[in-house]
Every structure is written in structure tokens, then in C-alpha cells.
Image (tube, rainbow, N blue to C red; front, side):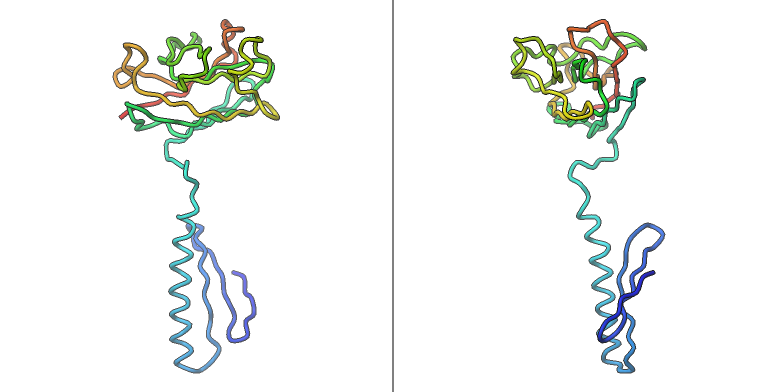
Length: 203
């Protein structure tokens, strides 16, 4: 507990077991009137202390947010993986520590067998850059794709949003397991060392 001086009475600040901060004032006057005022101040400040931490939670926070790590230290964070809207749901996929020499696709795919290539995938190879259901991240794309890709940023990072549904062609992801897949692009389609597979579920 820390204490700051005040002209009228000291301010006390402490943290409970759940990490919630409370602020109170200890009355040093013998006046009953001042004690009543201090009690009101303590009550109000306690309410604000409980309310504002909840209000400051980031908009994207979700209990089904998932972080996974690959064989080479690459990491992916998915904003939401459970109870997705089967008609249309936008999620954010963030990557860290990827090899910027290797382009990757991000999309919803049928959950692959271990070590197998994720396929089929929603959106496919979005050569028109219009579907929004998949993303292509590359810092050295073929000449025809320079306006279609999202380049890696510093230290192999990326952040993309994709809009998915429960359907991949005739496949219904409410009946079979599907996943957000991050995999090497078609210039290295046989390379499975960069794959990250994150299962998702639709309501």
C-alpha cells in the first residue's frame, strides 16, 4: 500500500487479490461531518476503480483468442476461434517472427491430417485480391502479384483481416473440422515447415 499526503487527510491506495486497485481517504479530523464526506469519497472512488478497468479492455479481447508457435519460432495470434458466425465472420490474424523470404497464405481450410497440405481452402489463391476470405503475405512476390500481397513488416511480422463463413465450397465446417491455416504460398507449395494450423468452430 502506498500513501500520498493531502492537506486534509492522507490518501491510501491498495490492491486486492484480484488485482483491482482501490483508493481511499483516511480522515484525521474528529469531525463527524468530515467522516461522512470521506465515506462517500471512498465509495465513489471504489466504484470508479472497479468500473474503468473493465471499460479499458481492448475491443478485440475474446476468451477464444489463440496463440500458436511453429517449429522455427514463428507465431500466430487469432482474434477469435470459437462460436464464429457461420454466415460471415471477420477475424484478425497476426504473425510474428516469420521468415520474410517465404511468402505465406492465410485462410480457412479443411483441417488437414498431420503433415499434410491444408486443402481445400476458402478463397483459394486470391490472384484478384478481391475475395477478402484469404490473404497473401509476401515481401518478394512474383511481378504480377505486387499489388495483391501484404508485405511482412519488421522482424517477420504481419497483420491481416479475413472474412470467412462456415462453407468451403460444398464443405460445411459445422459438420467437419476446419482451421485457419498459415502455409507457404504456391511458389513453395510443397514446403510444410512453415505451416501453422489453428482449429476453429462455428455456432
